[in-house]
Image (cartoon, rainbow, N blue to C red; front, side, top):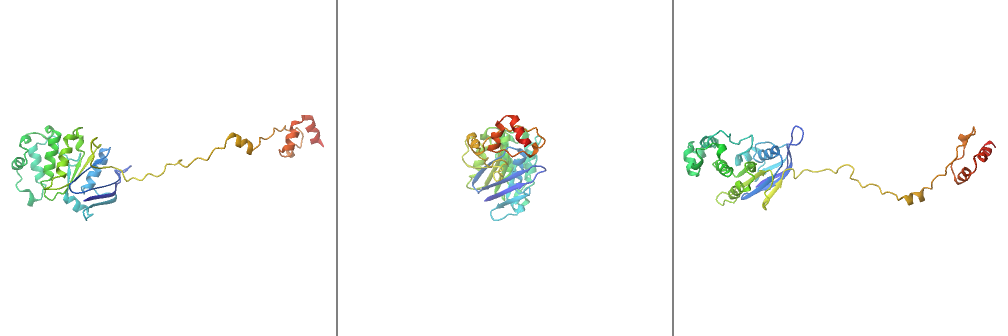
Length: 272
């Protein structure tokens, strides 16, 4: 089983891969959705042991060693990493990929026998760019499984070649459910198919979001009537014109009464 906990990869500014957790068992197909191609490729590289994460735990069965995970996994059709060049012929691609398999498994490096045994003779004379999306995925996954040590298949963005899930989903389901060779299959896609009911995850599903500032409850507002009752409106005080006006008494109910009297009477009292 492949188990991933809080897997995260630092980027130059933002996280190249935000914290993500998932798990997939042999005989199961897991779809992982992510909007950005960089994030999808980073996750595919990390899951297949080809990129060391900055944080988190990645384990296959009982091991967490990246080298061992890489030996049992195959990365399929990753953009800018190992996707076949468009000007490459199918025959050349097969010869090239077979040469990467350990010698004790690969046998002869001739592409013709392999193409015949695996029923790809119909596209043997085509360029990679001429192959339909479904047939392309069949070819690339078959090449990945030519190594019998492969137990984990990680497919990077198979939906970029066709908007129709029928071009890639049935093939991956068949590989995962093959009783003769049950695989753990992970497909990192731009969006989950609308009718998908199987195992699924989302890139960044383990990112913790701190509470946003300003979310604390605002203090209750006092109604105008309550305010008026708690704090009586101060009376208007007529500013004295006498020399000692600075020593006038503070505003009190009595002062309010005095303020209501004529200005001449206030001046007389001030003079006394």
